[in-house]
Length: 337
Image (tube, rainbow, N blue to C red):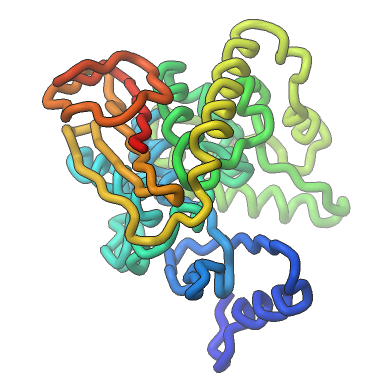
């Protein structure tokens, strides 16, 4: 929202909502591609001044690029492999991957330093209605990436101290697409179709000759397009969907037992990270209960050597890890008390 008045409308909105319910825990979530830390600042009691958290688009784009290898459209901002792992680790540790640097896809600087914010200032996700719905065919990530990669990245974001968000049906790898659909009066349908075609010309896969063209997009005004997005609940008890569901439930159980109890009281400037290889990193967070949460991740098809010493008690291991090595698509979480 562009607002040049002395008090921005978002500032007034947050102040009025919080003043109207002073004794309630009010969570205000922001969408802001400018990566402005100022809207997420905390007061001396570590309470949000304006907004509680914002969608972490940087981290989504990095997870998506790691799983699929896509490097067109806005994923071009994370195309450089040597820089991608550093940005992924930075986004996990500090929130924003871009904190004032130039984004290649946009050709301008984006972001403000965010390491001073607690991890709970960010909502992390691997899919959502925008990122799936803005694809030409509404493809979910399990149609675009290998199962091993998706499961590894699920273990990364579901156990992160940032707040995870699941997209409907993700937890059992629903096969239903989620294309953009819109119920509008008959006289507006042609304009909606034309607008959708124009919008898709900037979609990441449109710039990839091997991917569908915008002409293959479904009609957003068709009732059939809406029906195609309805969840396939019957598949929940069938393989491989029930296996996916067990994977998600196991991760959520670990989060409930090992992550959530440690979030309260976490401060800013509480994390650090190091890049271990082209696609491997180590991230550590100082948690609110005084413990240290660590992630060792290798998001590649090859074994990662030069693994540092594993510190703490293992709370989740996917793949294999031993002194000096991380296996392909291995995610290891530990806690030091």
